[in-house]
Image (cartoon, rainbow over all chains, first blue to last red; front, side, top):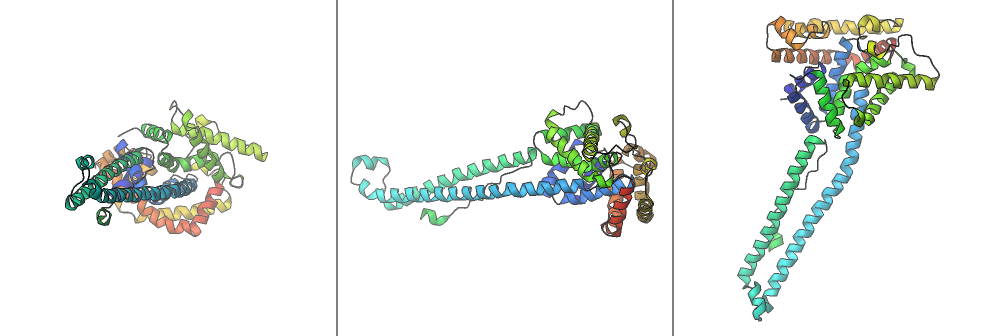
Length: 175
Length: 208
């Protein structure tokens, strides 16, 4: 695959690249930005052979891109932390709700109105708690998946991507 | 196979939508050609490299105005020439006599013309680099050497090379890349040490 990508770049230099080559190159640039250094050296070889003036402008541009990417990564990392924090808060909220439901179960047994809501014996309450937490987790997982797909699509068109934080099922939250 | 200009336009369109990588590819492709053009207006001490970089930066900022009426390389050459002229004005210098109109610029990159004003040091360094290049070429397997020679020195298209060598275009692509990769490895040591200095000096001789 590596050689294919490099061949595509070589063909691009010669004005012989297809659109597929370009897609391949852009994807490789996103996946392995460090590859551009070797491409820059390849352009120098071609320039030497054609007796062009050899410059390092491409390398300077790549450095500038890397700096920008680092600056972009800083808020991205912050966003990830915030996203992770939100998941934590959501999980805690679920825990509190579940806990409250569990506690609410006792007085609820005493009143007909509350009894019609969902107050169940302890075993069933635990089951409900697990169900709610499961629901919460599933919806969060769907949202995460949606964000991931969106980020992947964005990476094809903008060169920027936001990768949502990993979501893990935490057993202790539902106990 | 898309035409080169179509591919450039595709990259420009992507860059216009904010894809910096697409513009980086254009920089990689045209940087040395643009430098050759700029070196006809400004000398190394006047900063060929800086003018080239500024030209690409200007082009990037002006991308929203690029409608594709002309080829990207014509457009970037024009920007580079204007930038070089501005640089000369700032420095209070007159353009080098090698400066030419944009219409001539696309056809001037021949070795003879580039060697016009080589200094003795530049000529020596260029000669040294050429020797290494010759050695690298001589070390290449015959099929790779033929492919890259037909491409770089004869300016043949892949289709033409494929006909001459009676081999599929895919094989031609592969051979040209592998030849370049080999030469790069051979010249890398040279160019990153003494050779780099030589290349720079040689470039100084040609305007860098």
